[in-house]
Structures are given as C-alpha cells and as structure tokens.
Image (cartoon, rainbow, N blue to C red; front, side, top):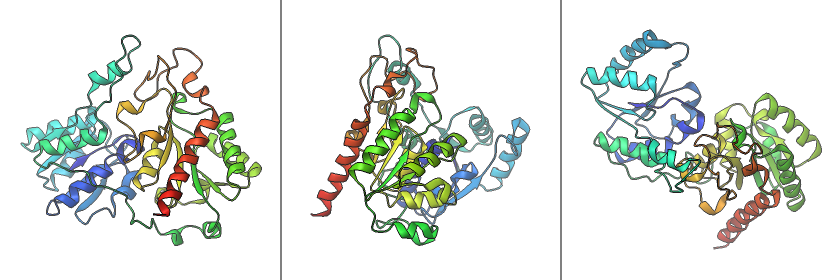
Length: 350
C-alpha cells in the first residue's frame, strides 16, 4: 500500500513512479491511499493499481479516526507499506503497521540540503534529489527497485476530446493550443497578474489563431479570467467550461505548451506529456519539485542572491517587493513559449 495525502501537485508527482512500479512488477497488487481528488490519476494507469480515498481531516480525524482507518487498511491484508508523505498522520499509521510487524518504509525529504538551499547566508545552490527519486528510494527499501519509464497517463494521441463539452470541438483547426495557469497557493509563486496579462496580449498578437485555455477555479481566478475572456477572443476559461480534473487532464494532453507557476498545474500538464514553460520566483527547480520530464531550458527565472528563499513558496518576501517575480519581463515568458512551439514544429518535419 502507498500512502500520500497532501496537495495536488505532491500526489501527482507519485504517478510516474507508481506507473513504473506497476508495469515492472505486474504480479504485485498496488493500492494508493490518498484524498478523493487524486482518483483520476490512478484509475486507469495499470490493471494492478487500485485506489482508496480517505479524508483524514474529517472522516478519519484525530487518533481515533486514524485507528479506525488502520483497522480498515489491515483488513486488506497488505504485505508492505510505502509512506511517501512522512508527516504526523502517516507516521502514526506507519507506527501502527510497524507494531503489527508489517514491512514499512518512508520517504527521506533531505531537509538538511533544502535548508542550505534556502539559507539567507552561505546559501548552497545544489540540486536536491527529486521527489521522483525520493519515492523510488522508498520502494527500493521495500525490495522493489524501480526504473522510471513513464511518458503520459494517456496514449500518444492524447485523451479522448469527444468526451469534452461540444464547444471544444469547435476549436479544432485553431492553433496553437496554449494553456495558461497563472495562480499558485502562495504569493511568492505567482507571476503578477498585470504582467501575465501582457503575456496573454503578446501571445494573442503573435499567434492570432491560437487558443489560450485558462486553468484555475478559485474566486480570484474567476474574476480575472472572465475579464481576460472578454478582452481577448483567443481566451477560454477551461476550468469553468470543463467538468472536473479528469476533463482538464484530457484537454492538457492536447496542448502544445502550458505556461504555469511552480504549482499543481505544472505537474498535471507533465502527467499528460505536455511541455511546460514554468515560472519560478521564491522557489527553485533545485528544490526537487520540477515537473516530470520537463526541460531545464523551459524554466523562466532570474538570478537573485536571495533565491530561493523557500522550498514551498510560503514565506514572506524578505525584500518586501517579490522582485523574483516582478522583475521577470513578459517578453521572457513569451520567448520561451515561442521556443517550445518552434521546437515542436521542427520535430514534426522529421
């Protein structure tokens, strides 16, 4: 059994590893325990992968709830436990399994190296082990070494567009399809909205026949996206038109490129094999959280002595101006998008 709760992006990063594990050990029955939102990630990736959802903040809240969850899990007669989260809740469950003499292993988050990476003084800019490698290490401890060979949760032609609302069928022939996901959980990971609008404007001018699909469903996102859709005919609020995560993944699989912050949407697009132009501010790819299969040359960032100041982007800017984001010119993002599109056009002629 695999345990990984937490945010969308963190759970999404388990998919390439679970996929590879399942195919390299087809005789092993694998169950992923996570939050309900993660079900579309695992439902169809391999015949020997199952999914269990658990709400550890409500249904299984507190020690009493975790004990109830533990009894539910032991009834499944698992033989090995992979804790890919290693927080208080998963550690408690792991302790119960250890007492029951189950074979259990947990992730090493390499906190010492990450502290050096984000230090104010004597910063050490070194690539930390990626989450993918950290997950693989857990399975190796359990006796299942994994070679990562994941490409996409969909076949090479992408997901089935016919299941999307009819309006998406009318976009056929309009190219390129570009995704834009400008929001993230913390200010240090969000490119300023006024600057992102300049990116939208420049892309619309450079590619007048393109479709710009906007991803994000919060209240703030809704207002911004509705405004952009009025003023830029190329824009469509994808998250508003689509019905849930499963459909968003299908659409992402047909994008030529996604523009995203260091956020869940970077990882979602990565799971569909779509190139991502990722924009980094307070955080840094050296933290180990870059999307699966993404290229370093598609990263947009600027050098500042204070970067990175945070692994998760949740710290207040010590300068007070978030220069790591505000000082990135929109033209830099547009040029990276253009480079990806040119690269794809070149390869399509081979």
